[in-house]
Length: 176
Image (cartoon, rainbow, N blue to C red; front, side):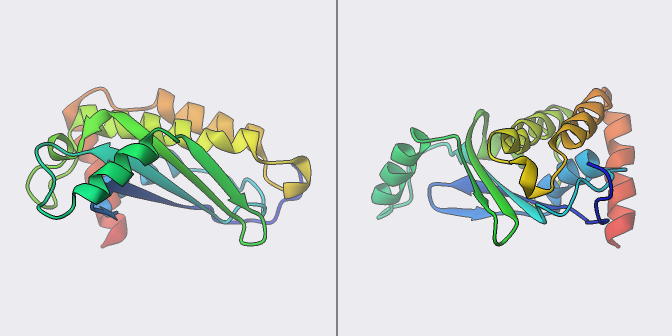
């Protein structure tokens, strides 16, 4: 897609459980990694929101069984993707079958380990590539360039904890 205006694509990852949702630097580093050295893909999408639905261990909080039941019923409808053209917002929700919330996050603020970092990068990439089914040529978003960039970043995933620590340090410096 030639002559695209330089547009910064914003991607916001959300972790969703039966009783809430949140985001933060722990999963944000995966998106930062995937978007490293990203060119402009066009003006058609300004933001992608990713909703990774994760299970929790144990019983639901007393009085919240109805929320757990609703969450489980909703999991059966996933994945879903929406493109709100007027807002230039793409949203995608999926069930993360590879993770359980308590397994992913240790003490508050602790970075993801190598396994979960790579897993989330791969899951987020798959979720984002659902764009291909929703974007039309007139939407002014270069899906082929987006796919190529994401595939390239997945090929560069770290294979050692030491490399992941350097990635965490680099993005922590950028946020500081």
